[in-house]
Amino acid sequence: MTWFNRQSRLVQLLLLLIPGVNWITEIIVRWSTFLKKGGFIRLVVSIIVTVFGLVFGWIDLIWVLLFKKLILQ
Image (tube, rainbow, N blue to C red; front, top):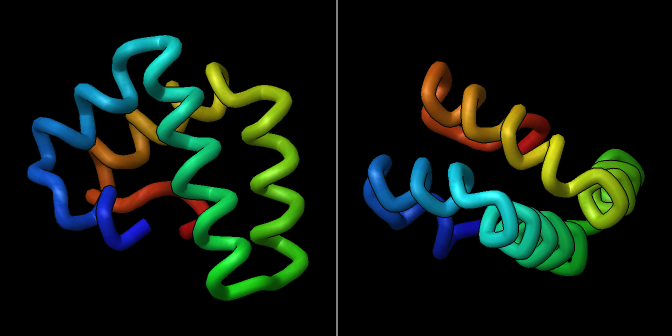
């Protein structure tokens, strides 16, 4: 998560814009956050992202454009 947040806004948007890359980015960011901080909500979001990562990546793309952070971060 900290690696993703350190990137420039353009790099973040590009990572979330490319369909296969956004799924991998979502999985890495969500699972690493869950493993580091724990929590039931983070676990549920990590599982959802693993299954529906492409759709969730597009939602996160819009969320990053609007609020400059990932949804449910």
